[in-house]
Structure formats: structure tokens, C-alpha cells
Image (cartoon, rainbow, N blue to C red; front, side):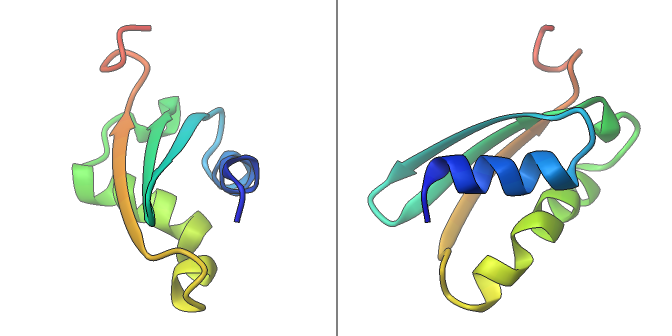
Length: 77
């Protein structure tokens, strides 16, 4: 799976998100910034992103996912 495909999945699932995707070996690193994260716990933010990637994780396309989920304020925007 290409970084652009992952980015599109997340951006389609998390409203008004800005997504940065990087691979380090078989590990996926994702940074997602979205106002949709306002007031959510870290777990709820991650669950929102996993909602976009769940099928790809379940079918084995994606393995290890490390993510950073930030509001625009947390990202300094």
C-alpha cells in the first residue's frame, strides 16, 4: 500500500485532516492533525484514525502502526 493511499483513507475518514505518512521498514508512522480531535481523549483520537485503517489492518495489508494525533492548536497551527 502506498503512502498516498493511506493518506487518502485517513483524510476521507477524519474531517478536515492533514495527514503525513511515512514508512520505516514495515512500520507505518502517521501524523494526523484535525479540528475533529478537539475535546477527544488520546484513545478516541486513535480510534478515529483506526476506523479509517481497520480493514487494512484486519486483512494484514498494514502491520505496525504508530500514530500521532493532534488538534491544530497542539500542532502549533
